[in-house]
Image 1 (cartoon, helix red, strand yellow):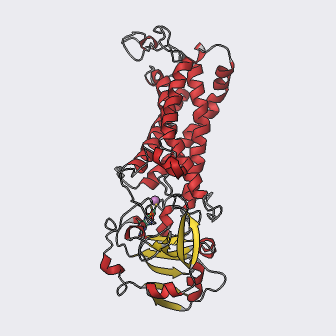
Image 2 (tube, rainbow, N blue to C red; image 1 turned 60 degrees about the vertical axis):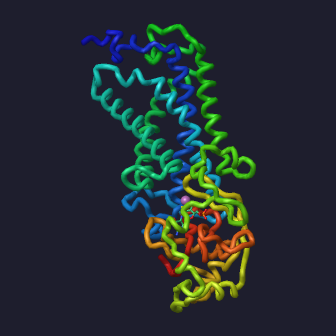
Length: 413
Ligand SMILES: Nc1nc2c(c(=O)[nH]1)N[C@H]1C(S)=C(S)[C@@H](COP(=O)(O)O)O[C@H]1N2
Ligand SMILES: [Mo]
């Protein structure tokens, strides 16, 4: 078998597209350099927002080791913080898909070059490209599946996407460091076709579209994805343009409770019998012991309002809703934590599923806008939004806003 037989993909002559070349690859590469870096940072930030170091119930990647070195206490300001970082993460990730695919297409001849390794250094380089391409495809695929579908991957999304991100970004950073000088030269240089990089076809077909035209096509595809996705986190009139929004099919209906529902009460196995006035009691435990409160008793405590969004890891968020209920700080004070409340473990009536418990940090409990909400937009919570009571905390990911709350345990976690 000869390497230069043009019928074989291992021969450069096999590849005929006149679009390939270092200019085309470099432009896409620079876009990805910026975009993937933002994805990596907003992804790490999202992980920190879960407060994984606070309690094992929050930690979806218990074996993270030193990869959690950067974790910090998630703040409560501004209240739209997670809405912005996670909306950016998901929208940008989806928008970059055409760029990623075009970039991979532009270098695909490289995949087939023979011999597989000319030297140890070359073998290592190709191995790192395997991690780069495999890692990139893995991160984009798991991300899209998590936001668009009922999750179908084996294993939990969080550890896969988290560890995958570190592998991918390490390979990505090494690749960027090696290639950046070449890419900058290719973009600056007048020649669109730096032959030294071996990306351009030696025997190209006649062009049907210019390289610039092809870039516009990729950019147009990205723009289309952007405008059909971004509305889910921006909201307002743009919500209707979010054709690609996850759960787009499930209509939350109108009225005060007519905003996005993640898991319904039926899905979570919440029986109306458990939430009725006779059955439901909130069990609050703290330094001075345990109190049990009916919904009527909670309503007799001072009621406060906060305008806060729900912002899910999946990238969608609601506009601010008017929540009304009892301050978490007041509930802490009821069980002996006056003034300076500690962390709290929140448990739902829900018996199964990863999101039935969540831990909140002291700074979140102390924020006067953090509520055990009983009502939203002037009406009792609907069963699907967490009746009889749910948590709402400013700037936190949706997953910390536990619905159908049954128990609050205050104390340092
Ligand atoms: N008990 C319980 N609370 C929960 C969940 C859940 O599955 N069970 N899902 C969480 C997630 S992931 C989100 S994004 C929000 C969504 O709240 P909503 O359905 O009222 O919009 O609820 C949170 N609270
Ligand atoms: Mo969520």
